[in-house]
Image (cartoon, rainbow, N blue to C red; front, side, top):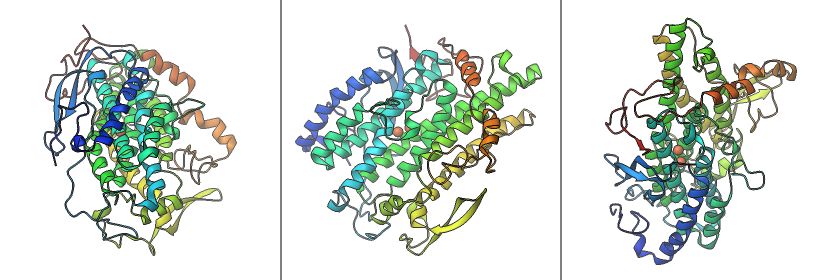
Length: 472
Ligand SMILES: [Fe+2]
Ligand SMILES: [Fe+2]
């Protein structure tokens, strides 16, 4: 595969110049994207130099170049992972056939919907985060926010490339629509619920990166298994970028936890509000919220859509090819948590319709590993407190638990108990107002807001006090 060509208007490693029709479609879309970026991308700082990484190759080692860039001049482009020679469709009814280089006619509509749904989340998160720069806790964090934002912009490019390259006029219309929907807009909202929520403060931002970007990882990983090879190659490269977003989330929360523990020990209290910290109980409520809305993104526990995507070879399981089974799943079963009167019970369901739940299981296990790392910090300080993932049935809006009231520890409860206790479980108006009161910008190199610890190290070997964004 060709290296990334940066001499052209649209950097790419897909020999774009050989396909004039596609090149023209993308060159036509590019100014509309930039207009969207100016209107809906980061509010402020657009004229500042930001220390960003840009992809220079798509192999695992050393793909990134770091340097100062103004965000609107970031070289968004089209990068696909190396093709796998002789790749096959690895699951479903077409298992064993050569992977498709063109969209199979019978799956056109379904595949387009999958790509649009994924694509819609990318600009949505940039819109959700657009005001955060104004209240950054440090230049280091400001730079990380902008890195995430430009890469989500590139993920949009990745999906638009697939739409324009493989779906003709329909694809071009979808590409336009991706720039027209708006997160949280009553008339033209983004497609998925969590992407219409606000990200009003940095605690929410770090939780979003940890929980919601991780949903992205699992969706991309299952699309990377697709029998439609261009989608697979696109998603494989996106996953390498996504890893950094989850690092930003996990490390951000870890640093807030670290600071909370320091303040607790210093002042011998767990009420940190008079000391300008974020107490662990408040963090638990934010965690409960962001985890539950992200769990919804996986869809209903029992889903014929999920079964159809799989049988058609369009969307696989997480690490499909590492699994030792028939990759057809026609006879297999899977145990799924379901509401059974006033309790939650496990029931064996056909594996094909349970694929959303299986992916959610992989996701929950991954989240739990991160939470365990946060708890190690608390434990090291000798503090008796554990952050916990809420039960998967807690505060759900989609699937079989949507109509139930369930506590974070997984008890089915009455509406009356919910009304009495939900303020202990989800962020309250007071929590939000307090967190908002902490959101005062800190922009001196090497300085950090009082509620968060500095990171252990800087970006790309630079010191923590490096001028990650040049404000002068
Ligand atoms: Fe993304
Ligand atoms: Fe992301």
